[in-house]
Length: 224
Ligand code: 5RP
Image 1 (cartoon, rainbow, N blue to C red):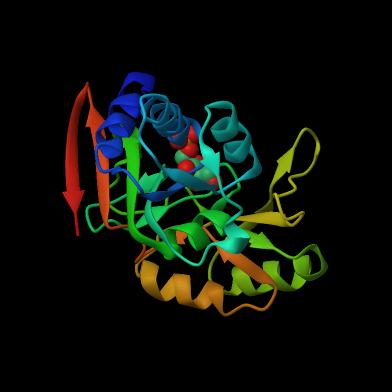
Image 2: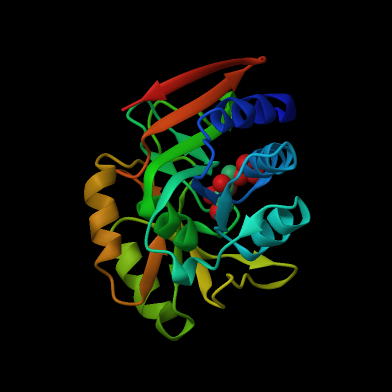
């Protein structure tokens, strides 16, 4: 079960990596929200950092915390990205997108010199896959992309919120893909990325450089 104190502990530990002058990427979700709050504290304490957001909600939280925000459209590269995950294994393969922000999260993580995941122990898994893989999809291509995903072995469900199809920050839909098992996450990531109309997916197989995982207040740091 998720543990709020451990989410915060992981976020505080990762925030130790922030140095003055850095441009940082702020993730999305309840764990990332603890990191955003911490960055806000550091800024109020005089640390000079600027940030980009991985979602509209994160942008709102970060501005409210007093963090100087840049438009990522103007930013080719960042120093450090701190984000949560839905699952992460010992190889630092992760699944993200429970909050539906994985397309922007993947872009910002890829732009980062260093990407760190923060999580409580409920996110640690032997092998990623149980969480299912969300795929941001152009609405125009819904049936086509769903068919291609099914041919990769997925049971595909259109994500809904409040009775209507979930709309991402880019106004696309999400196809949630359940796989009985993911034997080769890197191959699956490549195969999904090759489907026209599949704009982004939640498999992070090469982006994560380190993870801070908290268990009962104790944080362990794992690197590649
Ligand atoms: C959003 C994400 C989140 O980082 C992921 O869902 C974890 O969220 P939380 O920290 O709330 O459990 O990928 O797209």
